[in-house]
Length: 319
Image 1: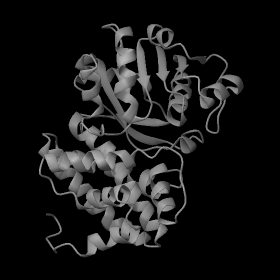
Image 2: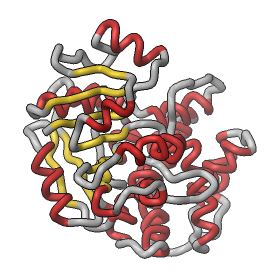
Image 3: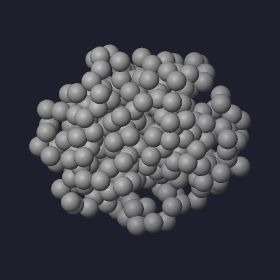
């Protein structure tokens, strides 16, 4: 297949490398910033080295018109603006795969919803989520991920295109749960980083159990299957998000706790605010999410986050 990956950052460059590994003809697109120019000049970054037949371009029209499968991997908060540029270049035979995790700040909308509001047909849109770090994949350490769509046949087609000995895919059947679960795990990554920074690593166990529970409540309230919170999109992604040294969200929380700056993208920062607004809209209690958002927005001392957990009313474990 002809595949274009729009976005050449950390994950986007890996996706281009991986699609090429699967035998596809690949174009890597990026805007002409420092990251793109360095990749174009050296054909490598700190994560991957591009084979000579991966084409690198900053021409968006060319990248979209040249491929049947368009993968997007950029910051979730920039998606709407970016897709308004991509949509006019799209034709009915093309498929759009969103390889990012987040909820739009302000609207509380899922990324697939944003795509459809930008003019894409629901039959064209897929999401690709789940655990895995580039640093592991490029060392041939395998993992499992999820493809989810509105169309079971499209899901099977995409899984068939990208399955390998490196990534085992599962068929998603709950687009709401898949997207909400994938986005919210980054919030708990920040909370895990706070635990690391405060030397309270053992609290990650309760964080995992209670975090998945509050996300399940939100998914159910939004019309999804609450069991999705316990699958690969969320709980199954906790190791890479709450424990891995490669997790940007965990590192953001740890750095904040230690009074250090962390300049790389941590999607959980914006997602915490967006999900707080979403939870209130649906009257769902999400105490960990609320506490993380308060810490970020009000620049609250991280210790207050832990106090919030321990001063709440005592309740049954499965409530």
